[in-house]
Amino acid sequence: MTRVKFELPADDLDRATAFYRDVFGWESLRLPFPYALVDTDGEPVDVADSDGGISPRTEFVQGPVLIVEVPSIDDVAPRVVASGGVLLNAKEQVGAYGFSQYVKDSEGSVLCLWESIQEA
Image (cartoon, rainbow, N blue to C red):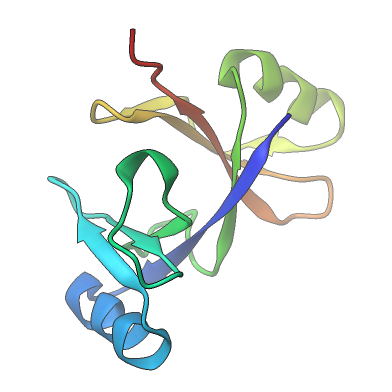
């Protein structure tokens, strides 16, 4: 089973988080690197269960991206390629939170595969 979240690109994280707070009442939590987790229900952000995030605009994140949480990126990435998709970068560790890898689906849409680091 997978869970889907979202990622929105921003040129200015402070300006973007203020926009979503002021317009929709979203709460945000800045991480120790350039990224803000968001919850859309107005409640404080739960790091382990956020709805999505706001990231700096990058080569891969130019528009909204769906984040697909998977048990193992190493298992899913080969299936992306076998099904006509493309791997855009190598699997990367994201702090102590997990791993990510950007891919394009068979139609050219960018997705982010996400694998959480399980606490013992």
